Amino acid sequence: MIIEKVIGNLREVDRAGRHLERIYLESDALRKRIQRVKTDHGKELGIRLKGNKDLADGDILYMDEKNIIAIQTLADDVLAIQPASIGQMGEVAHQLGNRHLPAQFEGDEMLVQYDYLVEKLLTDMKVQYRREKRKVKEAFRHIGHAHD
Image (cartoon, rainbow, N blue to C red; front, top):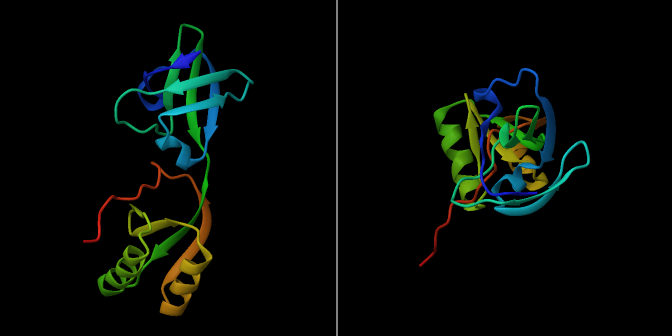
């Protein structure tokens, strides 16, 4: 079976009476338009998405009266950074920006994928952080730019 579009999201549909199969993906795979995947029940699918939208946790790829096949994102190894002040946040953001690291924000935390050099930087800067496994809402994405 080839999947060419996302039908909806588990948060938006009534699943009552339907069997749910999951496709477990790393967050990096959410950006891939073309890939071969396998459900937790061993069913192989091809994904060939049209358009510019990334996959997201809970996206439904197939649904009929009895079955749903949906994406479940696996937890990432992240550094959850909690700067003590807006000044410290600016310093951290500047340092991470110089390294071209993608970041996400949840509440008062900045999330970056784990990197031992970033962990050392945060320790040296005396910035509070935690290393943890966390499911992120979307794939970490680099923002394109050029140096003239």
